[in-house]
Length: 113
Length: 115
Image (tube, rainbow over the protein chains, first blue to last red):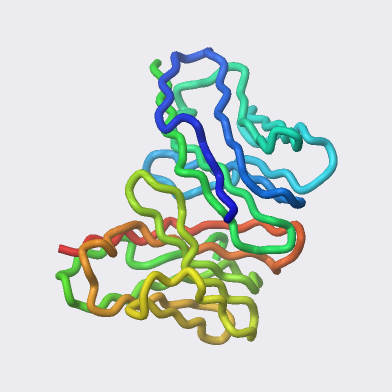
């Protein structure tokens, strides 16, 4: 069965630190990849997505993610985090032949001002 | 509306009672999904509607759960004889149409607490 693994459940960083959140999936075929973010008290929002083409995708608020097919990974990065990035981040994957999204357990990110 | 809306935003009920959760998708979106998010876990797929096709109910955890979508728009998720383990946030998402490159947009969720 497909699964998505997010390595860190909680991450605490200081402002201006660099961020990398890991996401690995298990599926051998062609996939769509997503990062969603949930800010405190708000609903899930799409941060960025990969369907095809350039494996380095840029999203909102300075986030980017790199799809490395050989490693089945889609890690989220931001060079310099801000206090407002405090949120929970979810990685999700679906096989391009299947609409069902498989979700990671989420990573709670806390940025210390 | 501009986004997916859900009601109520919070629901507290007693064990054994039935509850109905409503989802109003983005106008024009043909696909609608229900998910459940339990504390500390990712989203769990429940059910999928696409147009007039038969829904994919493969994620419903028990026969106490059912959902319908009227007129291809608003959807209602019903949980009968609620149990404490049903306590979770129930999320609805919609997408323009299913396809190879489909993005789901989420509502704010309904937080259900079963006492």
